[in-house]
Length: 236
Image (cartoon, rainbow, N blue to C red; front, side, top):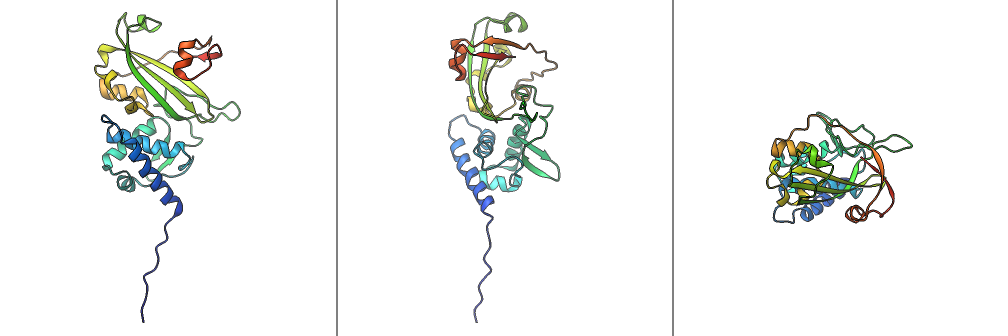
């Protein structure tokens, strides 16, 4: 008399998530300057953006992610920390990690604090493209940065959950961020730039003031951010 070992059932959802993460990790690992931390962060963000992981869904445990993504536990935790700083995921000790849904944006998020008009739910970033260059163009930032003449500019094209497009520019003194303009821009995709600048360059933002006004979008900015020239925009 022969007996057969019981068949182990594989959760289709878990298998789909694992396959999507592994595929996204292979895609995100391309690039000579890409770190494993950034590749892991971008892979998880892609699974969320593509709807494989939906709001409220739990991510695989961190130890499972090490096998799926092929990186160390420390790298997984660093990637998750960056996504948490963006408000993309929620991490609680003893409760695991899940995709953010209706939770308020955390205190680490100073920018892109937009909510829906109807429900007041936070609009989180779903997709981003980023450029870094060095410029010497004067502007509103010149006096604030102490009259410097050499700047590193970070430009971001962001799409929020409701498909709203947002363009952003950040100007920094080139002396304060040596080497930043040579970095692979995707190292900053889906990264909260304020904590990154503090970690990498010791630039801690202690305070912020905001000016909000309406403006007509010029052709240069419209082209950079993929928007329509001449439309009225809210400028912060």
